[in-house]
Image (cartoon, rainbow, N blue to C red; front, top):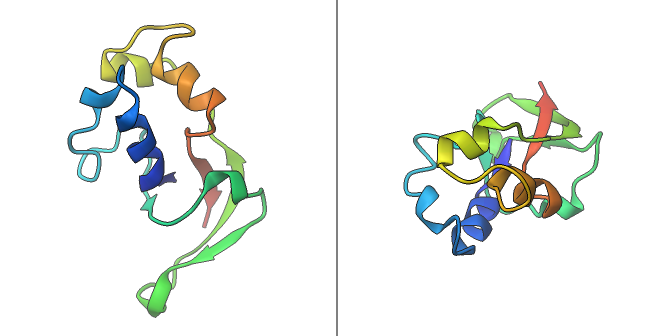
Length: 101
């Protein structure tokens, strides 16, 4: 899953600002869940989350941080290598997390 705050940070980066017009309807990292209010630097493998207010029986457990692939650069039209979005999201901890249900 991915945090809305990650998208906000990426949109503030001038070289990526134009990439994130409509991430809620068409996620840019291939994630199925976008969450709000989580700082990824505070998450750890094994953390468990439930949907707020009993709106769903869904429970997920963090299994690993994501390592974005080349397709993130390709989809967003950013360069490969050190100046690309893949490298930036990886080194800044903005790539999201894998989770299991």
